[in-house]
Image (tube, rainbow, N blue to C red; front, side):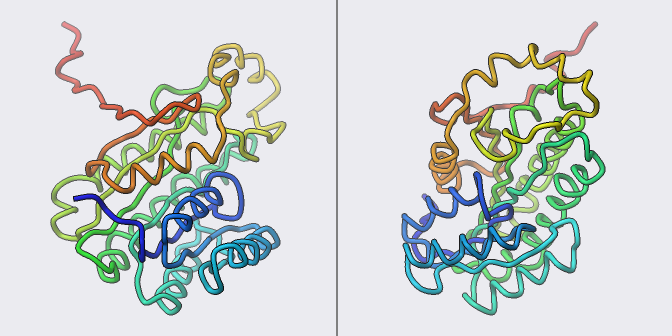
Length: 265
């Protein structure tokens, strides 16, 4: 059965700009009842809340300033969502930092923040407050988390970690106990603020390895395209599945190889 977007409520981290903002617009255009946008950037968030409420209707959008690496702050965003909408059906674990120069913060947001989202969503909120039999958590990883990028090894490692979360929480055991389906989207280079950030290498020497991902950065896609593909993934992708969106093409499912097949004798 296809998961319908209409009359559902979503919480999106990293929602003040970039992919999170465009995902919110894509969901709202398909009849979403309401959405909470979570972001550390307060000024951007306030402006986006006003903009989207003017476009899609009063009280459709709630902005909550939050550091997702702080569990208590993150939980407050969930509580405010339930207070306003009385339900929560979709969690987009989307927020991320793409700067190895501040790698400890990168780990806090990309790994700790995403773990916080899974725990809160899976065990405390979507399982209890979803409006139908099924809720959905979509986690934003990256093609860097499937093969690694030499210019950004720490960033790549954090995205590999998200794949581990999805394959662990996205199993039949957790689905049966919660009714929450878990899926992952891995975009290639996308035109967001993250991509435009300068000085995001561990040190200047790492910039010399950009040639190794030349084909990736030469085919930058629009966040609007990725957002529309994410909606399709949320609607009917299987539990625990991984989806790649690259070069503006339709999403395709990616399967992790079974280690027995590639065992070296």
